Amino acid sequence: MQPPAAVRRVLFTAVALALLYPLYGLFAPVGSWQWHGHHAFASLRVSFALTLVALAIVVLIGTPLAWSLKHASRKERTAFDAIILLSVLMPPLALGLLLALAFGPSTAIGRLLLSMNIPTSNSDASFIVTQMYASLGYYVIGATAAFEAVPADLEQSAALLGLKPWRIFRRITLPLARLGLAGALSLAWVRALGEFGAIMVTSYYPHGMPVQLWVNLQDSGLPAVLPLLVLFLATALPLPWILHLRMRRHRYA
Image (tube, rainbow, N blue to C red):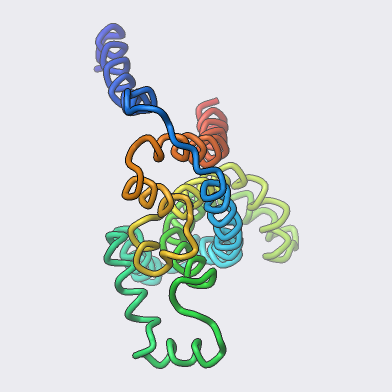
């Protein structure tokens, strides 16, 4: 039994208005906006450049991992799913503290990295590693679902015709899973780019966009936050938003 169309529309409208209402905050009367262009564009460059590096590594690691998970046994899948979920469900602040401790100078790996002149905090390297830990689980879960949506009989037919596994992946699996992979990447992008709690602990410097928003709020209040917030939303949201809409439109077509 389906709810009446009128009830459904009222429910959708009410929830949509509630979800969109926070955007009204951009027009809240907080006084004259204060634009700190140098800090804004510097934080934008930091966030985008380092996030692109982090996401490239996530894709290189996560794509073959997700493909392997599709073909893993039930025990292997359950065990690895439990580990992946730990990284996804970990509170950001707890993740940052754990990373700071695990890669700190009191651990063997921390001392090794420092001996190689690789700073384990407040550096580009720590920024990228933190974003990788924050976003990898999201990408792997989404990419695994994308690969599982590919009909297994097509892959089996290609194998019977003599195609090697990597050719099956390149010619059949990857093209059919591309929209799902794009959706997984967009989730990982938003998660990495917007990471604040963990980055505050491991990589306060160099300031990325979320940290710069916090600094502006602490130093100058909301008038200095709003222009940077508009820039952040305008640069971070459109790509994943469009990718998800395309993916869903294709799914429901």
